[in-house]
Length: 143
Image (cartoon, rainbow, N blue to C red; front, side):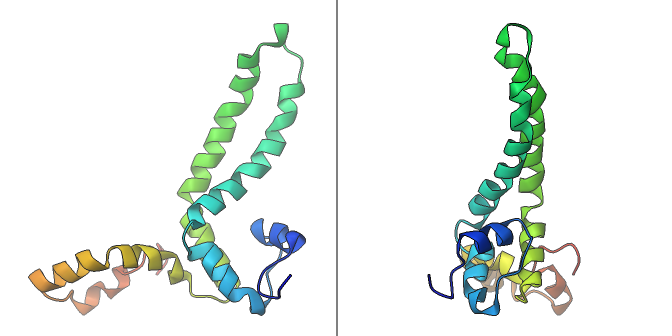
């Protein structure tokens, strides 16, 4: 395996915030956290731990093995964790970029590229945005 891509153990530790990857893998980290498919990868990784935590509840004995009883115990919690993960994915990805020494604003690069034509049209119609609006260029609530 090359030094620019993590092995399985490094990937697991990186995915769940247990370890930082070496500086030689920064390009891979930037693509993983801000490249195409980053939200999908984040959500897949976020879906695994609650599944293993909630799976033992399906082993509890219930009357007549009613599937709906197990589903009522676990599905709302699982869906709630996925909803929270989706809501906080940008915050978490921003944090992971900063931990690896990368610019947290990389999270918004794809959105800026997608909206570039619309922004150019706006500037052509109404002129450039005032300098005091520069703080609104990223989606971070902290800057």
